[in-house]
Amino acid sequence: MNLSLRQLQILVHVHRAGNLTRAATQLGLTQAAVSLQLQQLEKAFGLRLFDRTTRELVPTGAGVQATAAAEQILAATDNLTNQMRNLNGVNTGKLAMAVSAGFASTFMPPILCQFRKDHPGVDIVLYDVSASQLVDKLLTTDAEFAIGSVQGPIPDVTIERILKGRISAIGVAKGSFGTKKQISWNDLPSFATICMRQDNMVRADIDTALAKSSKRFDPTFEVSLFNTAMSMTASGIGLTILPDYLLVRQQFPTLTAKPLVGPAIEYQMSLIRKVGRTLSPAAAKFVGLVRAQLGRISGSKRLIDDA
Image 1 (tube, rainbow, N blue to C red):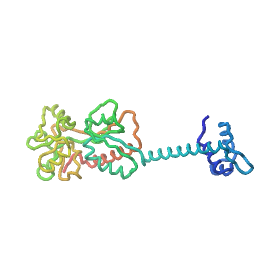
Image 2: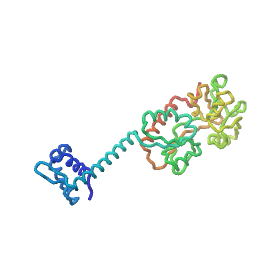
Image 3: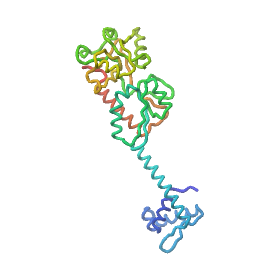
Image 4: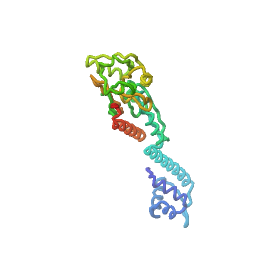
C-alpha cells in the first residue's frame, strides 16, 4: 500500500475540520475529491476512519491513531524540506576543506571572514596542512575540496589552476631593491637570502627548475614557515625567495616582490577536487568567494610588482 502525502494531508485536515466541506476549502479541493481520497484511504487500511453523521465526521479510534501518525510524517517531511532549503540557501550545514599553509596564512582570513558573515549558520572544518599533505587530507577526510600548490596529474583528483604567480625575491620596498624591475638568479649570491627548507614543495620546485638550467640556489637561511621568512625580511635580514602571491600587503606593508629571471619560474595555486564528486551548496559558495578574491588579485596585476 503506497500512501501519498496528499492523502495524509486530507486525513489530517478532515480530522481537524470535522467536516468535508471545510476540509476541502482549506485544501483548495472539491468536496467530492476529498471524499474520494478519504474512501480510498479507508479501503487501503481496511478500517473505518470516521463515523459520518448528517453534519460532521467523527474520528474512530483507528482514525485518531492514523491521524496522529500522519501528522508525524507530515511534520518530518516539512522538516526535511526546510533543511534542504536551508542547505540550498547555505543557511545551515557543514563545510569541510583542506588548505595549504600558504593559502591559510594569506588569502584565507578575509575570505573566511566574509563567508562567516554571509552564512553564520554553516559549521566550518578547516584542515590547514603542508602542500604535500593536501591530496591525502582531501581523500581521507570529509573535506570537499582542497586549495594549495600541487603538481599533477594525480589519480582520483582534478587540479584546476585558480591563481598564477612567479617565484620572486621579496624585500624591503624602500632603497635600491625597491627600484629594481626584476632580479637575476645570478645576482642572488650578493644578497642574504631566506627560503624554505628542502622538504618544502616550493623549495623542491625551485631546486628542480634551477637544475634544468644548470643552476643552484643556496639560501643564507632556511626556515619552515612562510611568515617566518617574511618577518625576517621585514626586519632587514635578507630577501625572501617565494611565490609573489604569498606576499600579503596588509601583513607586510613595507615589502615588495620582484620577479626572478634567468630562469623565470612560474608557480600556481590550485583548486583540488575529488573526481566525480559534486560540491555542496556551501562548498560551491565558498569556492565562488575564492575565485572572486583571487580574480581581483590577478586583475590588479599585484602578482608582478612594478613599483
